Length: 85
Image (cartoon, rainbow, N blue to C red; front, side):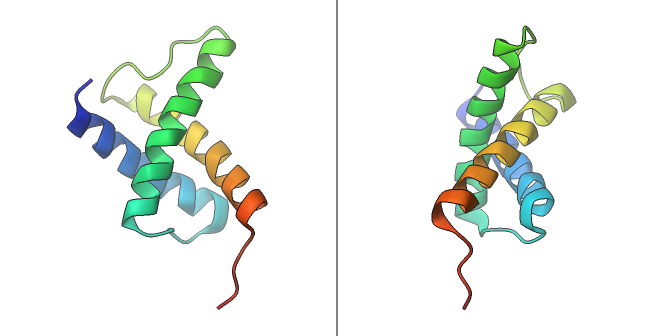
């Protein structure tokens, strides 16, 4: 999978994950970063349960990346906490 495909997949998964976890995005850069990390985490988690991980730019990979992004965002909020401005 190309670098651009990882960024697109990460952006979409990070955006969806942000909406699931806290209903607002973290910002474009943070959403992309957490989405890409989420894709890696999701691929690892799915592999541990005997399923294939991220295999390309398709709906299954988006599901895997989104599950991973939700896990990463949940951990991110648990460690950093919600900042009230």
